[in-house]
Image (cartoon, rainbow, N blue to C red; front, side, top):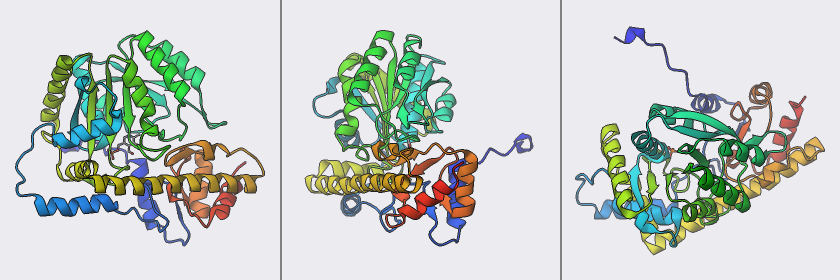
Length: 393
Ligand SMILES: Cc1ncc(COP(=O)(O)O)c(C=O)c1O
């Protein structure tokens, strides 16, 4: 049976992480993977660890929870994303296995309501968006997003593409901290996008995977909340992997805003039927810990404090990196790094330059020159900048 199969192509990012781990050169730089602290660790957050202790002490059964998972978690995730002011009667959420699981669950719902619908993705976007959408049977197209020279959003081009989309198409937007570019819409641009989506009858699909990593917990959800206040229908996939550092526990939520409460119930029932066919029920542990963090005041406060420390660390690193690049290159070419937000910036290097950085300088970043600022050495920015400048044409 399996003799007809060809090996699946390796995931480039996972392969790069393997190369980084195997590299024995001292001072190697990890600009690939996840959030790291000053010591290069990705620790369990304090509040999550405490929630896990409380869970362990209080949990007296592991019986099934149901297709939607932990309903307390779902309510808390709605509040985290949409805030207090949204019309909660029209919103539903289902716990999902990570942000990826939430994206797929939403995609399955879209496929049930509009088979083969077109989903517009930013160019570039997180590479997994494509297989997840296609895996559900949806069509994919892209809208211009990033100017590699200026490091800014190609907003006019983006808007023009959305204006040409067909009514009923779906537009996937990064809620904050765009991956891989680091370039984000400002408040006025979100408002313009919302107007175009409304005018054209396009459905917003917001992927929010880094809430709290950019401008702050509420500010990072401002675009999503603005949309929620304007459009009749909307879908959201949120991930707790980064904001709660529960990567391997697989915690996310798929959310729907419908025109009214009755339609929200119907859409939710279809989403849960899709979950039943995919994996039945989501894993409990991580979501239960996140729910506890969001529900218990002492844990929530501590989580917010630690998340803010992480965010400020990334901002500091951005400024230091941009300044070092300015010193070493004698130019403002990379100044955009300081104004980008989130873990990533796309530097605008060629694949060959990225490859030279890895082989000659033990500096690792994804081939499209996406660098993870959280992995950069606080005390070695000038060496890093010098290495980058040395591979430029
Ligand atoms: C833009 C974006 N969306 C969603 C995710 C989903 O992450 P996970 O499935 O690990 O929760 C990620 C993770 O890297 C991401 O960058």
